[in-house]
Image 1: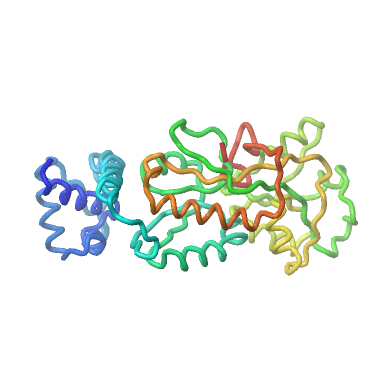
Image 2 (image 1 turned 60 degrees about the vertical axis):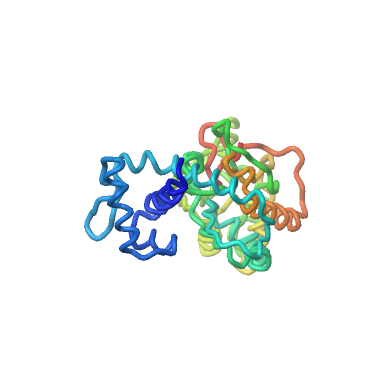
Amino acid sequence: MQPSDLATLATLNALLQEGSVSAAARRLGLSTPAVSHALAKLRTRFDDPLLVRAGRRMVLTPRAQSLKPKVRDAIATASIVFAEQEVFEPKRLARVFTVSMTDYILLVFGSQIDTAISRGAPGLDLRVVPNSVEDPLRLRNGETDLAIGIYGDLPPELKTRVLITERLVCVVRNDHPTVGRRLTLEQFVQLHHIQVAPRGRPGGYLDNLLQQRGFCRRVVRAVPYFQVALEMTARTDRVLTVSERIARLLGPQLGLRVLEPPLHLEPFALSMVWHPRFDADRAHSWLRQQLLEVSQAMAAISHPQHRKRLSRSNPTVGFPSKR
């Protein structure tokens, strides 16, 4: 490989990741004509247009899509090789990380995470995207750098680390007309339910438990966001089964009461997941450490016997899933 090949690889990576000549130029610190000229050479080299116009934007060709994760991995490996002799200083970082998480993480830990990153690495930019059933594939393909949630079965190469454990509680509005200090199982199944379901599909662990006891509940609203679910509960006579931390954080200001569920619900683990190509990446490792320290410093309650998923059939119901 010639030295010029590394520069070409960096240009190709920027074009594939950004999907835009001008955005790639900004990322590389080059002029738009220079990157446009480089794209022309790459098209000749690969005998493929790579980026084609679709209306006002550019889209990747199938060949470019197949190259995208390979080129990103090659760049990540090359970056580690050339950075080995450097002293790692977080304050000198100038990098963007894309992290997949729910609004639960942002609401409960977001401010503290933001403070830790801003103080330790002010040049580190964080892009947050919603959790998805495609998280493992997005990590493998390099579309996201880190995912935080509850994950069931994962591809064997992915790495995980538990951040906190959590449990489920029920919430109803303070002046609920039928629910008193204690929620019975009969009341629970008769009430209309709101469920946090990032993919919009109700069902899962709680429903399986009810079915085993010969009961079922009616989920009248399934929404992807925790705060929205809590606000909807505060304005109705419905019940919400939700993670304890966010219920106790937002419940009082919304006029909600926290109640014990009428059946035993096992605690669960919330973890971060990443691709092993980042194991030796000191910037990525530093970010993981910040997330670990912040979450564990705030995790006053530990649940030793926790579940690794919320549902056998649908491991991402209510939260993104963990292995």
